[in-house]
Image (cartoon, rainbow, N blue to C red; front, side, top):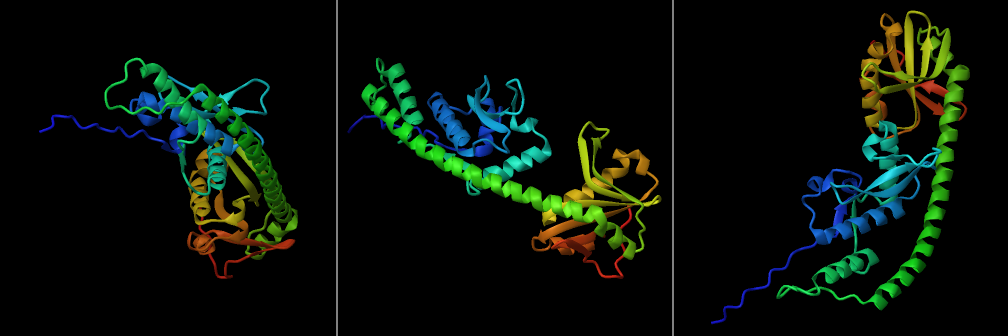
Length: 320
């Protein structure tokens, strides 16, 4: 009978959640990471940063190392004179949502990144393990052998691949910049149309006589956060708050109502006014338009160079 002890194979992770790579405190503060996996995590961060690229012409991904998680992806503000670095959690809610949308676009809705055995960083991690264990290799432990010449060849191959990848990234960034300009143009035209006449006339037809309008009202809430409202229309006792969206989604409606619930606390001068809510939009996802009316909000749809209120004439808006 053989007394040979079976060789146990340890699984080395090479697949990681993107948002773990964005956290300084992921992987149980690094306690869940094997020494062999640290270079693989570094490779995953590099792959993530390269594929994401600069976001909104401002946020450049950088790889940082801490005493917690071995490596993580942070962002350098390219618009600042000094090199300031921000974690994902340091960004504002609006910047985080823009970042989330960009990640979803760049990675096709997949929140996982994989480092294959053929990629240089993982091979280099094996080489480091070889250097550490070559003199005292435990029985039955199979370690991939990587020579210096093989590493040089891999550097050359990766350099060529990076040139092609960079070209593709530049083309993608160009297309995204075009989409961003289109989005800004549509949003701006809708704002301009509403402020320069449509909004006053539309609300007058619903019995609300507007005296003046304020665009992009911004401020700080008592809890230290920031608030912003696209358009506020006044007539003394009544105030209509308008949120402008190029594409209206159900979650936008929920978020806007939550902000309306906080408005009087954030802006005390409106504490005694009758507050109504309205959302202006170009296109709407399924269910979003119906949600507006059910929640007591005016639904203003833009068509061409004009806009119209979609609610029936007997509609009674909710009063905050």
